[in-house]
Structures are given as structure tokens and as C-alpha cells.
Length: 234
Length: 234
Image (tube, rainbow over the protein chains, first blue to last red):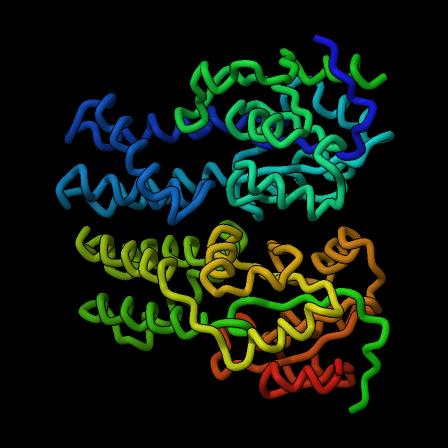
């Protein structure tokens, strides 16, 4: 598919699982959580129930590690009928702190691509994680210098992106979003007339999966690694 | 003191305890927390220890209700030497959810002042709380229409404000910040050459207090209610 990117002024990059590894750490934490509670339920059931708890709490807590930890604590109490030890609660808190303090593991070629693109475009980081967490990762990553600023969105729906474009003072056709989530980084952009490039990550959070029908007829490019972007912007 | 505001293009408003009540809810929650644990320690000691725990965790969790709740859970386990019941942990989680779901209680005259100022200035909300939480409060408050956008800062130090001004593409002398915290909303602005107006709230979080010497010789106006701003911008 040929796409015309000649209007683009600002490129937004998703952060987690687009620039650096993230979902893998959540999966690890979920697995450790399930192991801690395995005397009460099967690993599979614990995993399913935790996801339901996260979805229930999402409107209250929003995205990010802190809400995830609070949901694990609540789940541990519920699943054990109040029998869970404070030792396990403490371990859950520490799981969260460990996630927040993890070193940043960049995905392939990220720095090279950002360095090239930042010469001709204004780059922004557009994420729905926690601001402090994302600022810290950006700092640790060494990528800070390529970005004009960070935009933290409370969600990544069409309305959030419309507000973002208004705030950036640009037209939809001048904005390109790049990210690993079809649901959050690609489809809402295409729907409001902006451009989007999909770079899938091997692991996708269940909350981010989309149905086949939602993809039908939508115009966006899919690439395997960020490096392929450079062939569109030479 | 006469101050010249004729250069001002953008006015930033702090949110919590400047536009609406907030600290009062934290104080209430701290008091309830201390009551729950009163079989282990005196109310006063619990209160002091919780503040220390919050300060210890601030670099990890940042500002906002979720980090506060996580610190209360950790404190409850530590203070009780692991003896705390899951019933109390659950109550702590609910304290947090109640705080997040509280109705927004506007301070005096806020809407009238914003309505007037928004006619001639670009207004932004500049807060270090949690983005989702602040967006929700802004929506509930009915004040959304007066603000160009929300800026969530991970902290409110000079460096954070410099980034903000860079992002807004304005000079320090074109920016006025209005807020209840000398430490966060006033002094860092004055130090980088921007303007600031202090509107004290009756309750100040210990973390936000400043020493007398830090105020000496700093140029800013103090007002009792937001309404007084209108006399400077007629």
C-alpha cells in the first residue's frame, strides 16, 4: 500500500511495547501473583479473575502500574475470602515497585529511527500510562532528546486524540501516530482522518485486542520493526 | 504591591485547593486510617509515620490518590507487624475509591473568575495530581469549557515549568501561574522569571510548606479569594 506522508508535521509515538518492553513485565507480574495465590484457585482462574478486576477498576484507577497493584491487592482479598496473609499483600506491593524500577529495555533500532526522524519532524511521546512512570522511562532510555514533549492521555479514544490535535494546533492530516496497539494507536487515528502506522509487539494485553470487523477497510500501514519507517521518510 | 500583568498571554491554574477542595479529603482519609489502626499506636504517631511513608514512596509513586492508598496499605502492614486484617486493607482500598469518586466542591467565585479571564487569556490547568483523576474532576466541575487544555506535571519544580513554557512556546514573562501552594505554584515561577499569584487555602499539606527564607525578596501577589484577580485584569 502506498501512503502519502508529505503533509505530516508531528509524529506521535506510543511508548510501552512500541519503544520499549512493557507488556512482558505485566505478564510476569500476573504469573507471580497467580503463583502466590495458587493455594486458593487454579492459575488460569486467578488470571481470568484478575483481568475482570482490572476491567472493573479501570474507570476508577485508569492505566498504569499503581492501579494494577491496587487491583491485585483487592483480588487477593476477594479470592481468598479475606484469608490472604499480610505477607502476600506486601509481596504484591513489592511486585509493583519492582515493575516501576525495572530498567528500560529498548526495542530494536528505536534510537536510530528517532534520531533520523527528529531532524525533520516534531516528535512527541503519546502514552496512556502514568506520567511519572513514563517520564522516568524516557529519562532512563536516553531517548528524551528526540522528543519535543510527552503527552499523557487518560485514554486513547477518538475524543482524546481530537483534544491532542487541538492542543498541538495541527490538522488531523498533519499527524502520524505510530504504535503497537491497533485499538489505541491506529484505529482511532484513522477514524478522525489522521495517519497511523502499526508495529505489532509479540504480546498484546487482552484489553487491547480488536475485532476483525473493526479493522475492515481502514487505511494504515503495518510494519515489522520501527526501522521500516525510514523507507517512507527518506 | 503593583505588578504589571500586561505581557501575560497564558494563565495557569493549579487545580486542587485552588479551584476545588482537595486537601480536606486527604486529611479526612488520614484520620480514618489512623482510627482503623488505633489499637496498634497513637493517632499522632500513625499520622507521623504515614507522612514519612508517603515521602519515602513519593519518588516511586508520585502524587495522587493511588500512591497515597498504596502507602497506607504498606503502613498498615508495617505498623501492625503484619498483624493487620484483610478487612482493614479492604477498608483502606475503599477509602481511596471514595476519595476518587467524591463530588467536586468548587471554591468561592471560581467559575465567575474563569469565565471573565477566559475571554482574553488562554487558560490552562496545571496540576501534579493524577491525569485521569483531574480530567474527571474538571468534567464534574463544569469548568472544562474555560480551559484550553490540562497540563499534568510529574512535579512542580523550576525544571518542570521550564519544560511547560517550552511546550507552550511562550516566554516566562508571558506566563502567570495561580495557586494555593507557595512551594509548587509560586516560588518556582518567580525564580524563572514568570509571574505568580498566591491564593492560600486554609489547609496545607506538610510536604508543601516552605521556609521563611525561601520567600524573602520574591515578587508575587497574595490574594484571599480568586475574585480579587479580576481587579488586576479589568
